[in-house]
Length: 569
Image (cartoon, rainbow, N blue to C red; front, side, top):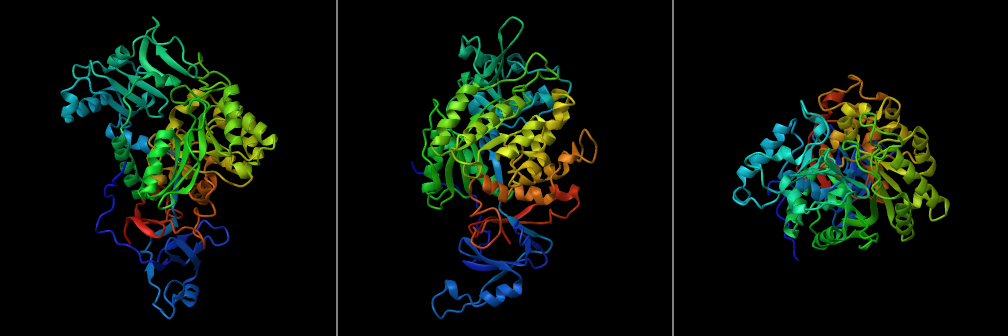
């Protein structure tokens, strides 16, 4: 099938010449290179950085640019000046995101709802604005983003199918993914379609009332029981294009797409073969029936922008839905300690099998029990001599809650922790009551994790669409531990301020550390000679502006392979 990529550029966007020097002018160029953290100029030819240094050096060495012209041709080298007060940074990466889910969420957004009434209003507005849905009560209504933890005057616990029984909505199949995508809320019509349900689900939970009847909430592995209609390839393309358009506009040049089945990977491969992937994608596949059903790919496709070489697994659920697997019961729900989505013996077998076949292993772990189990497994495979941590680069995705001893053990083993700073600032309003005063000390401990890392590597991401796509939201959360309004439960210095990252650490986390986490540090992640010319121009200096101004920063241009992919200069 041929995918025709709709226009996400406009004719007004300027393009850069084949060869040029990008010089700071009255701005700055940050390289994320320890030896040369700031330079005056970058020399770019085609898709690579050939040289960097001060402007006099670049003009002296490359003023007559013979290298890329015919013999005897000494055409002058064009110089592009960075606009006043703007800065250049390496292309920004998101180390953990969900591309197609972002497109899915955008069709019906529930994350701004602050009450049950808000949810109902959004759903009813959607129905009324879509005649095909309004006139056909059998059409499924799907959305994502609800979060009962932020609803005002809420009764507590999960919502139910009955809450969706308004005159306009009743009788319609409705399926709504929670903000963390670890619970699904369905209408009574969907419960009717599902019919009889199993008493229990391994690694999941069907929430029931006092009479044992399903209430309409399915957690973790139980979500697979919900018979949502499959996505067509046309819908997948629509979601993909929306995600690419929006992510380029916020300066992303690389995304680690977390958890894709073989069909989705094939979809990406087709796009790559056609040259229709506008940025670098590092794909985490998933096991299907306990097996890998996709091929490893590296720099695949017409533009060499697709890499498939890791497998993502799930150990537990999410904190917001009480699904994170804890060693002790929840402080605010003592009848549960969370959910293990897979038996430890089974995931140990999967890890060993996948590891032996040469795949990177990335495992979702939120709770301290889940993190402990996975660290035990990684310690075992590393001890067995099946490749060292530097070669194999095992990753724990999220690493939200750990015992103090396990915070240290990640570093001793060389296991990478891929974290999402906006999770900390989103969860901070309820996390302490959910975990208690002692357990919270090992939660969202980013500075501790970085300090313990033998290579000082802490890849940062967003988990979008769970959180916003703008990487500067994560940058701000990492360095401030405040929400977007400048607040935290601990005041204006930030929530557990000792775990703040410096601005240099945060920038490295979303550039060079992200590249290392995807085996790409020789090609991207910093602005040094030999690497890809992937960079972002921002309209103000995020490394020095007052903290409260960081979120007002805008992207002037996103450049990939030396070409403008978004914006202009």
